Length: 208
Image (cartoon, rainbow, N blue to C red; front, top):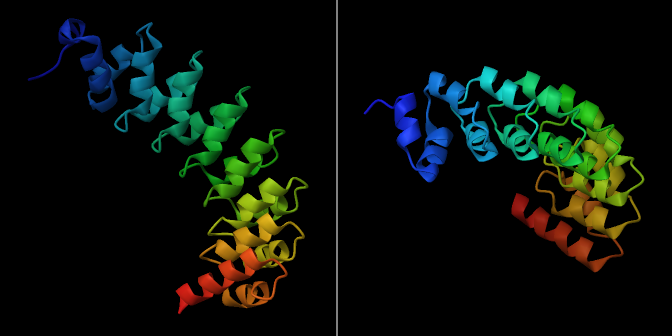
């Protein structure tokens, strides 16, 4: 049955939320984002069928939950993500940094963020450019370096650098990273920390 605007009004609230999350009817999606209830707009923002124009509108919404839903949407257009990457809320910026489809240019900009949680989110993103990961690996706060060490796309020279850090948690992250090359793991097998040595040995075994 074709859903009309009149049908929307007759739906229960839960049915309207479900419809907003799933429909591909662009005209009705535009109607739904006009609703005052933010839960409706959140549902539209989560919709993988929502066109770029609608997600761009919702990226400018006043409600944090709506903007967060757009930031999580893997179909969010670059214009929407660019706006959200500059949001005053660190949570929104971190959510953009976690999005697997966030472009490398945006991630590079977010790597300069003042909030360390945003930097960690960038460090974990497989789309982060090599030079960005290199810069983050040199951050003073060890949790950022640890996040880089767990990134499967961390460059070889970055993993070499991190494998020589004093902090055991960073070396352990390198040892556990399935992408860490054998030459680095062989060196970590000789580490003074038993947990690091064991992780390196296990990772080498898995490569055979």
